[in-house]
Length: 172
Image (cartoon, rainbow, N blue to C red; front, side, top):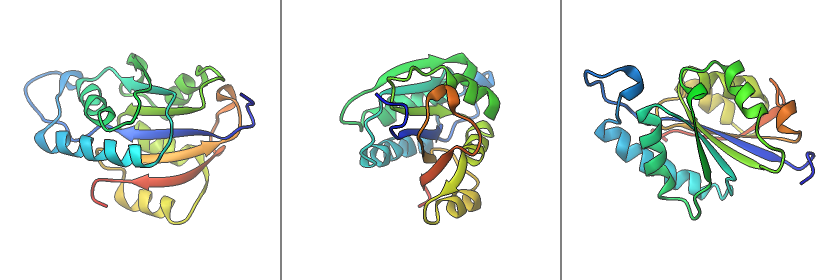
C-alpha cells in the first residue's frame, strides 16, 4: 500500500459508564451506555469503512463499548487492547497511532475524554460540511465518534494533518 493513499482514523469515545464503588478503570457501562454502544456500532458500520485495526483502551467501559459495537460490523477487525490509551493525552494517542504498521489503512480508536475530543480537534486541519461545528457544539459526549482522513504514513501523523469528514453523537 502506498503511504499516499488516504487513511482513516475514527476516534470513538466509550459509551456512558456507571458509577459503582470500583476504581475508575473498572467502571462498567450504564444501561444507557449499553444501548448507545450498539447504536454507535450500527452507525460505524453504516460508514462503510473497512477497519483493519481497532485500538481499545483496557478500561472496562471501553472494552464493553467495543464488544457491543463490533457486533454490528460486517467483519471484525484485529483488536489490540492498549493500556496506554487509558487517560491518554492527545500526544500520547498520536504516539500510539505512530506505531501503526503502514499496511494498516483504517484504524478505530476506542478511548476516553478529554483525550479523544482533543485529538479530533488537533488532527483536523480541515473539515467537511458542518462536522467541526457539530462536534464543537456537542462537546463530544459518550458514544460519539469522529471520522478523519489523512494521506501520509502513520509515523508522519501530526496535528493539523487530517480532514474531519464526519461526526456523530447519540443525540443526533
